[in-house]
Amino acid sequence: MKQHKSKKLQIVIVIILLLILIFMGIFSYLYFFTDIFKNDKERFFKYASQIVSTKNGFIGDSLQEYLNKQNETAYENSGSVKFNISIPNKETELEQTNNFNISYEGKYDKPSNKEENNISLNYSDDVQFPLSYRKVGDLVAIQTKYIGKNYVGININEQNISQNADISELKQKYDNIQNLKITGEELTNLYNNYISPIKNQLSDDKFSKIEENGTTGYKLSLTSDDVKNISKTILEKLETDEELIKKINNYLAMVNSRTTKISKSIIEKQINNIDSLNEEAEIVLYETKGQLTNINIKIGESTITVSKTDNNSEVTYNLIGQIKGEQEKNINISVKFAGLDTMQNINETYEIKLETPYVAEENETQKLSIDEERECVETLVADAKSERLLNGQDANTITDTDIENRLNARTNENYANMQLEMEEANRFSITFINTNHQFIIDNTGKIIEEPTRRRGKYRRNCNNI
Image 1: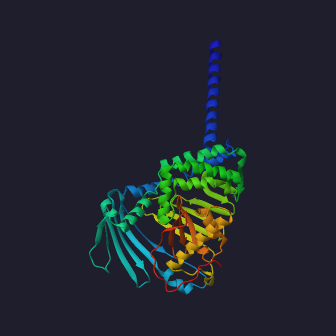
Image 2: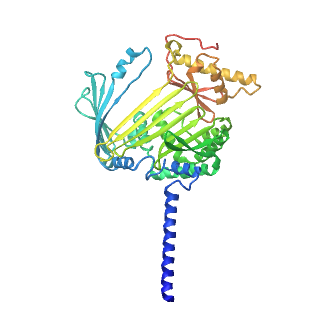
Image 3: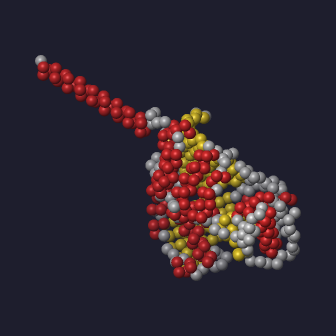
């Protein structure tokens, strides 16, 4: 009888243990794979981590597979580039530009370092300029029927590059593009080095859950002091992150080779100027079925939204930016990949739309000769030194702040056409926007570099107005 009771007790214990294990399994699933037991802060950073995740992240597995496949196997591509520029009362002048397009088709074999492209510059249906390009290892060659049937080639090895400035600059741009690629490991490091430290600075009350148009979002609200503290944390980390600085400079060089590069001294200056920031910020991450689908960032009155739509065979990313300032700028970038389900014929579509206020022609800044531009730079320096004297300061040297203050004061009609950038410590560049002519001055106001000077057909007085 006792043995019978003992067996019943064992069965009850086994059932209880099974129920406990099942409960623990359900709890573990709900905690790790759903948001039921997470607070708003934990949910926010869960979806933030998907931005850099290499598995089921914002950049989906199929797209990552496609991008990796391009580097590992040979493939063919074809496409075209078209323009659509609209300016009030300029339709006739822009007709030729909008009719112009570039078409191309090529073969790529990155593992073997081979490329071949047939490019056509199409000015109209009847006027084209064909160009063929080939690359095998370090040998690059071009051919067009307008200069002969044979290819003209050069070897772009390091020795030849160093002896030709134009080739060197072209090779540098190509290397910059290659260096823009970010690996999964680098994305993880970005999250660990920059996002995680910020997470520890933020209290739970700065996070909230919102419901909009049937979607769920998790919002981070930042005061101006929060923005200052976070900016300082990021900049202090960036100051010692040589690899990320290099990657940022590669991007800047690709966009504009004359853009000032980021350096430790420039970052240090920005850290010292953090107190001038006075903008609040909001970041909202929207999710659908546990996947990040939309990122909305608002800083002051400016907003940037990045969204993703994915239907397995096609994925589309959209970036919409509204930048408020002296002139409002709207930018819309759309990138679409179709055919990812088969990984055979992938169709990539890129659309870039930029809107800025149009300034009527009569108000446009007239172009100066280089001699006249030099006089304007000298006038600007004299203005800055005079201002320092009036403030009881030493006028033998000037700072970028002195120059910027005079440009912003607009006491000269040409100052609106001049842009200041810090080159390095005690060295500044002043660029004329409509001609892209650049003058380099030191902290004494002396011009140490300038464009090639040519005598203009006319001269215009550049004195103060």
